[in-house]
Length: 264
Length: 308
Image 1 (cartoon, each protein chain N blue to C red):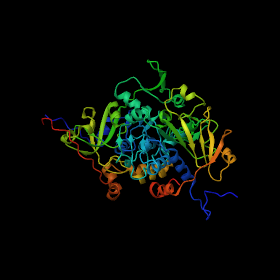
Image 2 (cartoon, chains in turn orange, yellow):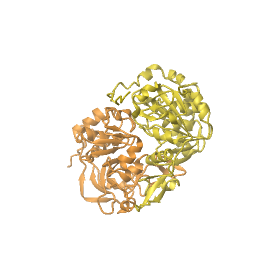
Image 3 (cartoon, rainbow over the protein chains, first blue to last red):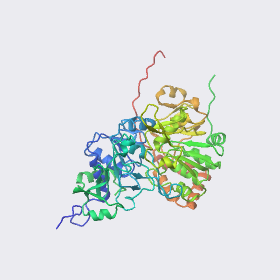
Image 4 (cartoon, chains in turn orange, purple):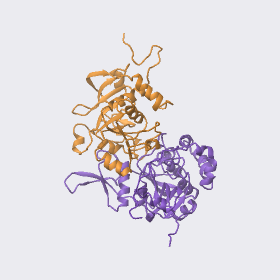
């Protein structure tokens, strides 16, 4: 008989899939100094990292903030709480030219409506660009972040709608068509390092730079994950379970960062 | 002789500088978004504008819903922290209320376009766009070979809006304008534009400006008019003056989902209020007081008198 780590004796889950995703992202940031923060879940993950294992982490926001220490959970990446008590607030010219393109960002967190096997992301349209079925936000800073940041962590829920064979639009480059393609285009950044989802963890460590399943959440199987991924999935020979959130991390999320439960 | 005051009402500034068919930049990254200017332009029923803004936000969602625009230049379409911009999506996906041409860049691309426009450069090179479909979607994004043998580099063209409305904390009557907080592209958009209207929370004496010159991002030299419009950026925020009114963003998200509810919203908050003062009266003093951010003062710095 196996014990389901995600379930307490009452039958209530001890944590939600979103909390697992937030905590996994926070842990993946350990040891990084300068982190480029995105909206939504990444925002919570980065603030969790700073309030738990990495108090010296510098949070960078594309709005022009370096070294944010937000006193409340920011409503957006342009929230005034990011300005008050930050290390530096610059123009967006300086932020993109000196900080990002200048190579000062160690890791960035990105998401997207679609992702393919090489970690390329679509946040622009579903359907045809000129007559879209769904018009999405577009790049914002994502394209240049994907190209210039030292590494990229991709945060997204695992679903068949998201993990597609072919993107409707390539907004932010991952490893493009794989192998050494990024280097051939002289991209300064290292590209995607992990894909962190609510049900599984992936990396791109092989020479083909193709997404590989490396960890499974409690209760998940390779077959169940494969069923929501459009291409035949590579599976690591060292497949491990995802480490569940610990009580301290959950307390920070629930009591400090997201007391209203907006991201649960 | 003292210089002429550039103070105008918003009604007069819009009447003088905004005509049908021009290109318009109302910038401000989440902060300093000049809704007061947008609503006055809508009230004066301007048409066929090219709207330029990195993050169109509610302000251009409303202007598109009102039928003021036929073209949008941007880099991120979203209701920040809330979700979609329903009116712009209706225009792009279904041509409601009419077709909307789009010209799309990334943030860095828009940043570079303003810098090139402001500094009269033919293009701006940046490390972006390689391998993306944005290059196919927008023929203005191109690649050139570095003359120094470093391979291809992406370039974007200069951007020079006809008119920019720049919201800020304070200015003097000549338009020397100071702002702090998220600077966004306020300075570069002002320098890139043919006409600049500074819209401020406070009018201050020239001496206030001169005692803190590092904070003057925009000199009166390039400012055509100054509009005194307290809370003119509501429901966005002005650092140190008021917080974002998030309930307003959530309300727009709900009510902008159908053309009928959107029309009712515009009637209530734009067409039925003659000016910003009436809009603020409709909001009520309690709601505005709730947006007070409290105080966190910086320490004064000594510039030195040097013979003064």
